Image 1 (cartoon, rainbow, N blue to C red):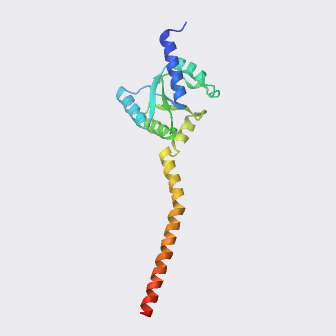
Image 2 (tube, rainbow, N blue to C red; image 1 turned 120 degrees about the horizontal axis):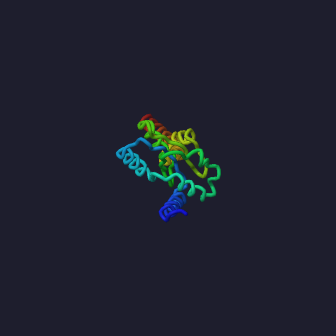
Length: 174
């Protein structure tokens, strides 16, 4: 019979998974408290949460999500794990985790879920190479603005050419 603490923890994990559609699992063994605090701050600055989890209880919470039928729970979750819980902009969180893993040898990215699709470590690394939401919006706005800028420049060029022509005619006749 599960204890009340385990039942409460499963409910907490289930709620976190409902609130945060995307998540990335990591192995954190070997990190000291300062490194974990640094990681949490970096992730929090990007609008996500990082929690150390109890694997068996997290597996039960994962089973409650009907959209995660292809998540290989048993093969993926062995040993101490942490999870980055993401509401939006998964690529920027994946980049933070990838960069952190490169600088902190025992830490590693294991797998994750983005838009109800399972990704292994290689998939998460590919997601990390995607532009962030802000970068994507900036590129889109630039592409939208480009034709208008070119048109304005062309009109300005025509108007200045016309003004020079009128000035030249005026000087010639004057």
